[in-house]
Amino acid sequence: MAGGGGGATGFDAALQRRQALMGASGPRALVKNGKVFLIALFACLGGVLYGYNQGMFSGILAMPSFGARMYSRILSSTCADSEQKLTAMLIMQHKRDG
Image 1 (cartoon, rainbow, N blue to C red):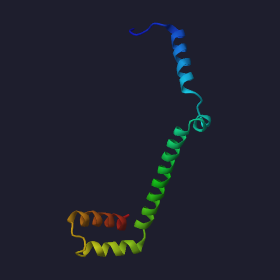
Image 2: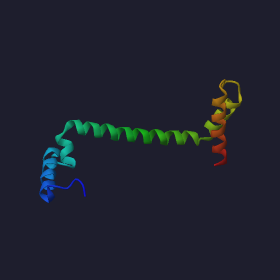
Image 3: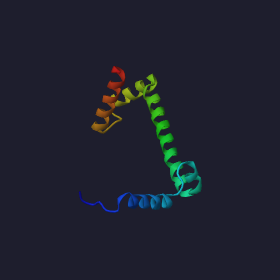
């Protein structure tokens, strides 16, 4: 086998060196390193906002008043772009069928 050498003592020394550089893990590490804490907080906030946004849009799309208002707008000439009309019609058809 290629690459051996050092045996268990070499791996143990490398592991101890990595653990010394890494520092504490878990909640203590977040409090100790403010930059990591801010990055984690920002990522969590993004996930919460994304979930809230998805919930709000799904509730709005399920509203009968939204469907009635948007379906009439789709059929009128206010939407000039044919791709917008096609996409909106597919969404509305999916909502009525499902």
